[in-house]
Length: 501
Image 1 (tube, rainbow, N blue to C red):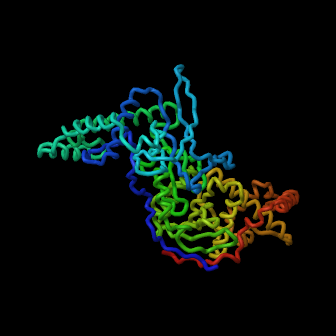
Image 2: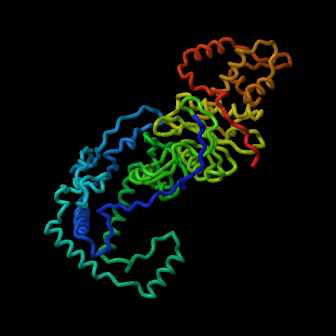
Image 3: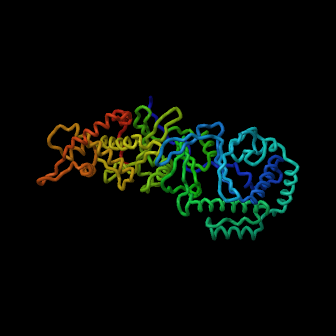
């Protein structure tokens, strides 16, 4: 098969497409000459909003769903358990409060028949579900007499809106904006009718109340990251640490990401619309390694800046000590993927400086949670040392290492040393020779030998003990391993060390 090369051809700047679908309960409509059906929707939604303000039982907004797109079904992968859980579509948990104050959860099954506007036969989001708004599909097609009367009442209220702003009011608004900037909300008086402004204020208060309830329940905390989960391809992943996403995204409890271009979005509707036009099926850059379904792409942070920034923001959700987010130009990113008939799915990556004075061959390394404990982390480490061998250099990871990174590297160094000692037939061994053959830094070799209690000081000399029990144990583990394909093959690498830039 020909090797794939790709230049970034589509925008993945981390921002979302504008979503023009709005919640009927929060609609701010200033067009009095709208069609009768659209006005009927405003009438019904306004009536529902006035009734909901008198209802004290909180309702948790159910997630959006796609009736005919199983590719967006997700399964949760936690840090302690990576087993997928089946997803039942069209089930929405609604939280109801009993008279005693205790909360119970009821699962309601909604049909996808009908649309709130009455213009479509089916709906694909909860905002367009007639049953969710306590209506039938037939009721949405024609306004009732009560709705027509309410529509006339709303039209009368909106006629009281001022024709425009006076010069003094415009100067007042500009002065307010120059004084406070984005630290305060713009002045909203006389911009719309008092009726629509009152609806907006009530919607603001209700959203603030919902956030306060989440804070009291401990689901979010002030000043911390509110992103708890991300929808990533077929998986729903729990996040572990804070990541500096833009504030408008960080305040959300859930992010939706394209697993190919790594663009992040606010809702599944936007994700579905993006996936329909996204032409990316693998990372940008050059494919430098392929064996079976496993490929590695070399991505230049200077040529594909937006993709690398999104990759760093994603990695920070699962790494504690990562500090690189936006200054990605001096780095190269090596992205490992697994290919199937839908594209190349992200397994993990590592980054390295283009010119490292300390010969660091890894600056940051990550294996995605859904691929952990499957041998892919060791493959990434092995690949980084394979590149160091081609460069004829001795490499070492940049410090400090994360907890999981330290465990992975200690395991890899142990395996490399035991394999070398098993194949070594001489009587005298040199740390320098081990380093030159394995490309492992001598400091890392000595620390690993000390951890294995294989380095002793006797009569003024350092001796390396060949512990046969550890070697036999390693041989037994190698024989039991079934993932023989999880080994990097140097013959499959087609790569020339890049020149300094």
